Length: 115
Image (cartoon, rainbow, N blue to C red; front, side, top):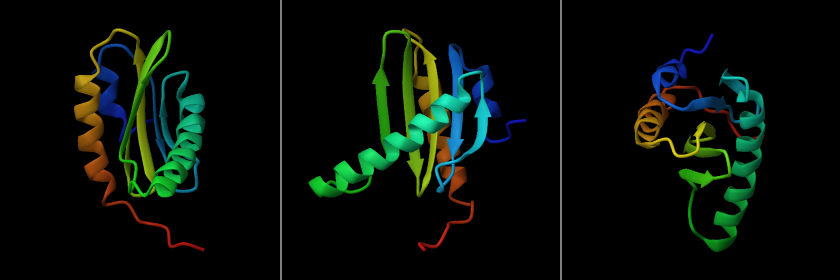
């Protein structure tokens, strides 16, 4: 059962959502594509963090892309990634607002110390 992601259930067009922890593993999933979304968000975070670091651009806090069938929006909060996939053409503003609010709540979760 999703606790953090539950508010996203009511957003039109949501096909999957995921909350990924600092270790790259899913904490919560929503929808049939939740596992795949979680894995890809973890991978994207690693690549985008590396790119931002090499460019001296600071931390990546938001990403969005559109494919033939879905629109994906994700936000980061520390080492956590929270993302949603919606049917392409669906208005993503409600999901983006919820993600931003949920990301603020992630600030209360414990942080892992670097090994």
